[in-house]
Length: 370
Ligand code: SAM
Ligand code: SF4
Ligand code: SF4
Image (tube, rainbow, N blue to C red; front, side, top):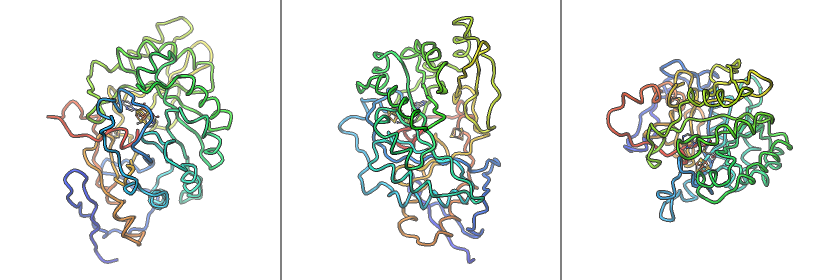
């Protein structure tokens, strides 16, 4: 194949990142970045809109009536998303997570799920197809999503106490809506279901133990997430983070029957470290994105709603693939450009967070997808 240059546009600088296609665009199912990390997970943000205004993600002061969301024509179509996903699966992606914003707000999402479901890995295995949601619309949509081929869901829930939950979501949604969503998702078989609780000191840390107790005897795996410095709008401060170590001590010290011990972990690249109760059944997970970086095992690529690829959650710019998808009919050329993007990846923000000098202009979690 002749040497050709594919431009992928940097979001911030707007400069084309020249990517040569000298290597063959034919995918081998294994791509390694500069730190020898394979590409395995793809997170697809299907909307930048949300019905919640979580204080740590889309604070109302910023995401108000004057905020400009992406116009519909900028969004990748389901056909474009599926084409890109197919090329990335050929490069080694085995798991796709739909996210946002709130993914259940994207119209006809089940049609996208059905399209992605038809993609198989190079050795003929089905994809692990999942979705992260705030749960408010889950009771209504779980059945359709399951029928379309979704495997499972992760549901975010930050408190059991309604007043605290409403302070966190700042949109007057009740815990009961989410619990109903969880129940329906479980009944239709969108399992195993994980629950994500972001803990912000001074707002919902009093809910750590009630949440641990409540979900201990359920089929749901509760995971506590350290509040992260994603984006620029949440006004993150380190003293609002409850380190996982402290949280584990708090649960273990709360009662004799709540003592925790490490559980055997699943996959090496699992972001959550699992802990189980010494006394009887039940497990929790902790995601220590701030205090214990897991960049060395990070195999994730993120696709924003309007077609920019981000090789790190804390990236300051994305690489525009929408133009390629809209103007390039040759899949081999796009495949080569994707390979180069991953092979050039050096990201390890969480490992070097404290060494950063000066503020970075980071993308928002609601835009890039969690
Ligand atoms: N709206 C969906 C939801 O809330 O599940 C999906 C998108 S949301 C951005 C994905 C995940 O990111 C959620 O579990 C949310 O709690 C988490 N998240 C958002 N902002 C965060 C932050 N600053 N620190 C840690 N986790 C955060
Ligand atoms: Fe919306 Fe999810 Fe962000 Fe909350 S965390 S504001 S539900 S996108
Ligand atoms: Fe991956 Fe970037 Fe997070 Fe490190 S900081 S785990 S490279 S997304």
